[in-house]
Length: 71
Image (tube, rainbow, N blue to C red):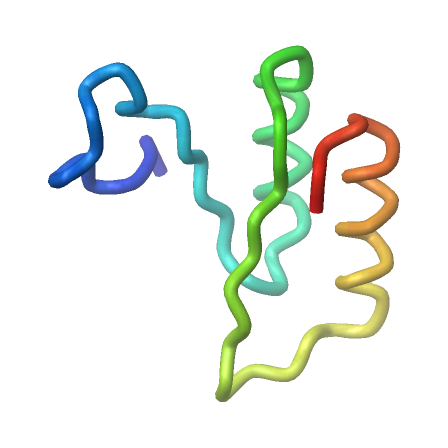
């Protein structure tokens, strides 16, 4: 994934949103490994049809705490 479709996003913000899929914690870990010093926040949207895997939210919280990113 290279980022979100930038339609409607100011050019200066293009590429600053780095999405990961719900329940795919390794995707977030890869993003953190590549962008740790520039990470400001982890933003999540609720998924109506999928239950979180065991420990998913706890891992997200831990990663946010470790990187000092707002969750």
